Image: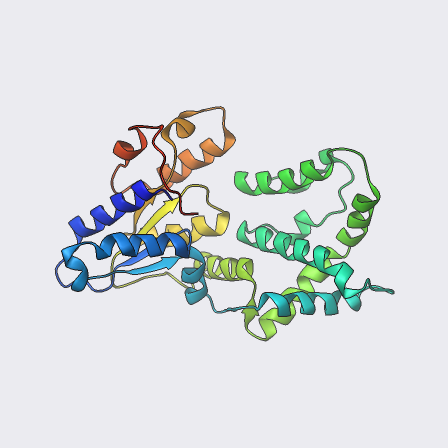
Amino acid sequence: MTEAILKRLADYMLRTAKEGEDDLLVILPNRRAGLFLQRYLSESTLSSMWMPRVSGIGDFIEAESELRLSDPVELQFRLYDIYSTMVEEAEPLDQFMPWGEMMIRDFDELDKYLVDAEQLFQNIRDLKALEEPLAGLEPEQLVFIRQFWEGFYEGDMTPEKRQFLQTWELLPRLYKKLQEELRSVGEGYQGMQYRELAERILKGEHALERGGRTIVAGFNALNRCEKVIFSALREHGAAFFWDYDQRYLEDRGEEAGRFLRENIKRFPEAEKLEDFRGLDMEKQFRVFE
């Protein structure tokens, strides 16, 4: 998020603050942006009497999920232990760790996009083989899967890629077993928390209903779980502010721009921010990723 948008958001919040309001929640892409937003709010004379609760999206989902966030180091050891039971001769832990990190990143992403593991973990030898089994997926889910495999098939089939394909054949079982073990102790990596919350919302088991106002700000691209979660928040009156470059948004040739336009249509902005996006485009703004 840019400094300009954070200040614009702080101004909106101060202008729309209601007397006696003590349960305003602001959801941002990360904690760092929240720290700067709180600083801008603290510069107001109202700050001594009023300060909203500001949360990064990961923290918000963790609070709403029924799963505790797993320790990343313990997660790696748990995955290695599972892997060791599935092969005749396991690689040493230090050699497995880079693969393990990549596996967990893949598991995390597929859960955030609500992708069926069986659809992704196929022993794909030809990109054309992706077409039939992926029919019916959401556009952003298709993009996620195709981008992965297109990157994999660039260049020659190296020994490293062959080794990856051999490991890939284990992934459905690794994924399933890791999920089972983590759920048995009430834990999960971040993607599991996203998926657990989104699936409960889709089943009607959690409405994300709050007593106070909710503001969702600073996002541009959304994964599938975030769309489900934001839809639930929208049903209870959440206000949305988007972070994007107007010129990028208007470029019809950009696939990501199409997703952004769809997101803005689905979650209309509470207040337009064109005055910041359209002025002095060469000015250097600080960016809080």
